[in-house]
Length: 255
Ligand SMILES: [Zn+2]
Ligand SMILES: [Zn+2]
Image (cartoon, rainbow, N blue to C red; front, side, top):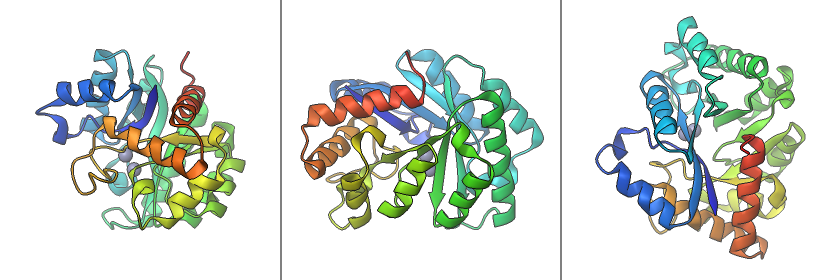
């Protein structure tokens, strides 16, 4: 059993063959997944998928790249959706300094608003971080995000930052990059972070693991992430699959 904690099956890349992608995921042993919505159309689609498949859950929030587009109505809508029985987390939210569509101060404001919202509705948060680690850690501390905790999704930071995040009640989620030969940091993080604090994800359709690097990613490939972690930690694949699945059920409060 595998739990893919971060998928975008709501992306247009899956419009043509979604059913086949889901069948392949189940054949690979994926028992659960969380579909992440991050703007109006993808939130709507994530909810639709969660309502259509009992093994798909939804996470709803606003992406930092598009922070400039988020209105007060959007925030209210996310708050309303938080009480939906299949919504298990708020996000993805955070900071992304790679793209400059949204100015940093607006990204920070939208990030803080969503942390406050998650604390109000008592749901964990899913963090997107690109080239913004110091500011992310500072805001999580200032907003006392440890109260709800959550997931550092597709974590690409150092082992030191990973340990800092564990102290703030966050799980570390590893994706395709841990399988890349030249990805030193994710491999170090996989080695250092206790299995009880690790999650696995694909972030599909992005960041496909080796040997599919550069191609469209899909949930079935999360198996390759689990296998890589098992190899790095010197554990069996079954143990990594079982423990990361139990971790995901714990953070998302699923049965
Ligand atoms: Zn992300
Ligand atoms: Zn994502």
